Length: 163
Ligand SMILES: *[C@@H]1O[C@H](CO)[C@@H](O)[C@H](O)[C@H]1NC(C)=O
Image (cartoon, rainbow, N blue to C red; front, top):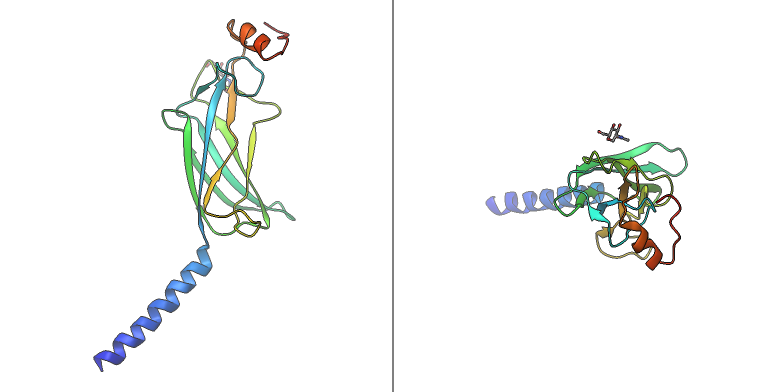
């Protein structure tokens, strides 16, 4: 009798476990960082610094309808890095991380073009293995470019326009 109960509960357990796995799918760990761009070029330079306490949001939307399927927010740590965990396969969705808000009064202007959103592939069906996903760095810029930027940008072969 005890044996029968044990077998039945083992079967129930396995059924539940596989149900849970089917429901949740893989758990992805999305990592990235938010930086301050003091040169207003909207990419990382040697003068960029990680922004601690910046709010980021991961959002997936259905490709066809635009309906939001998941949303998850966090804030960056000391070095400007963040970590977001989310479950499920999102192959048919567009998933992006956006930088919502900067804690810095000096460096709180949203980017207009590149780096204002970072696309992540939250599926294992496209040949991307594992569950770690690295999002492109996101940033905020200052209202005015820093004096030091002139030399840095010249070194990169960029002629600064508004310094
Ligand atoms: C940035 O910070 C300044 C100073 O606190 C504030 O006046 C401005 O509204 C902020 N800008 C944004 C986009 O949050």
